[in-house]
Length: 294
Image (cartoon, rainbow, N blue to C red; front, side, top):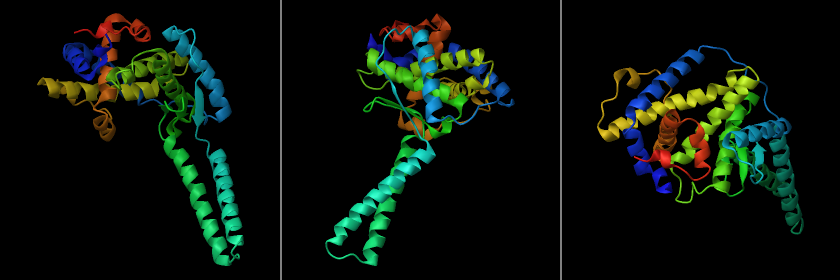
């Protein structure tokens, strides 16, 4: 059944349900255009300590929504500039000390100290920059089993969506066969849908619509990207009103490099949810993707 998650079938499924996708896209776009005019409170920058507290709440809500009763622990990592700089300084001093001790055996000169200091600085700065690079966007690091929260999602309210999305990937890899045949559009579409459910829970719980802002923003542009892509692939003339929606452009380099996996996955799962309700996300956790049959 998991062959239904592969790209060829996902495109066929969306192509067979273009009218449903058009309705979803229009609704999501109008919602985005309405909320972008509002001012929202995204909270304070989240500290590593607060992130762990927040993660506990997100994990509980995600598990409840997906009806997961037992899952391996998820580990968190957040880029915290003071901490990373402190670590970089330690690396710098360590390399400088080693370099100085090595040169002592041959007689230490001022140039030797400068060289050791420069190498130490390069290692220290490189360490900080590497940490920053690894936390540019929220990701689930499969090799380390770590959820890395992106620097762009350090506001407490924004961090919720990233946590829910990446924790869902953790559950996918840990509890399902969804990724056995390699990455497929449903991996991202499923995670984006669960993210949406969790941020809506938070928005209602804390009476703050800001929790849902990023999800609406992302899915609006992803749905439009998927719609135009499918129309082009299937030779369908897109509706002018939808093609000209004033939505942000999906990051073309990312979507092209990943073969539009994000947008197609979001479109497919959004269609499935419209047809069968949010139980489709729980079905995925049981390796049941029969709702994608064409």
